[in-house]
Length: 289
Ligand SMILES: C[S@@+](CC[C@H](N)C(=O)[O-])C[C@H]1O[C@@H](n2cnc3c(N)ncnc32)[C@H](O)[C@@H]1O
Image 1 (spheres, protein in one colour):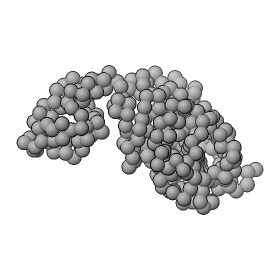
Image 2 (cartoon, rainbow, N blue to C red):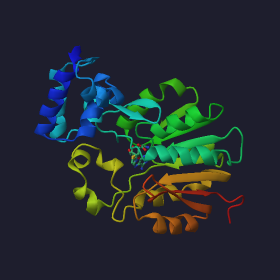
Image 3 (cartoon, rainbow, N blue to C red):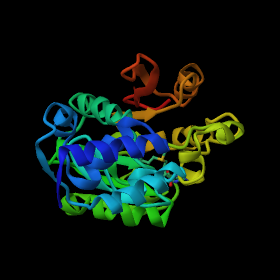
Image 4 (cartoon, rainbow, N blue to C red):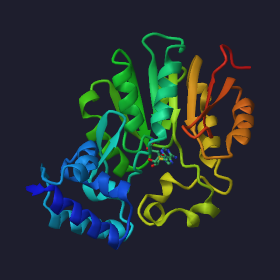
């Protein structure tokens, strides 16, 4: 539909008077109606302009009202921009987070140091398949394996990985278990496992707590339960192969100890854009003791 800048600005003011925040509204207009943020931000300067929206204002109002009741906009629209991709998302599957883009960056930079060429990578707990897609596109010469125990995640991941399906095996199962055929050959393994301590789940924002899947969030009593399970399988790595994980704030020291105890070497912390330790990378020894 075509609408004037004046009408749209008045609509935006009405919506924000009802609640919510301006960045979320700009996100809805961008991802939900095709109005680029730069155009949106220039509307006040060009009130005579007209804009083209792919959804009508009535429908956008209905979506906004559901968002005000804490439904994630990404689930409402079924889409989520992440890195250069527009991913499919669906209720029951974790919405990919912006900070996880950095996990992909770390893995891609370390992949250059990985031992075998072409390498074989894996994504443990693939969820929407976001990390698997990033690795598959960054390394077109490599094959990869994306694992999740949740059938809903595998359905969404299959959609997101369609363009690279010939090079990515999508497997159901518990962490490393489906990877038996590739044991000892994995040159890069990424994982963003559940890491929220069970006792703090109740403090999460309702938009997360009430709508995102608990098995994707709940890291057990100390938040480190899934890391222990992942570290129990590091002998699946090729000699010199990398494991890179995302973790919660404040978990780096305990995780470093777990990584060292598992026999990993060259343990390195990586930070998010705010300077918080949020990722840990380490490589397998050339000979396990
Ligand atoms: C925090 S989400 C991460 C999803 C995705 N990789 C991302 O970064 O957005 C954790 C994922 O691990 C999966 N998961 C939890 N326990 C698992 C297990 N034992 N084996 C395999 N996957 C598991 C969940 O289903 C969920 O999709």
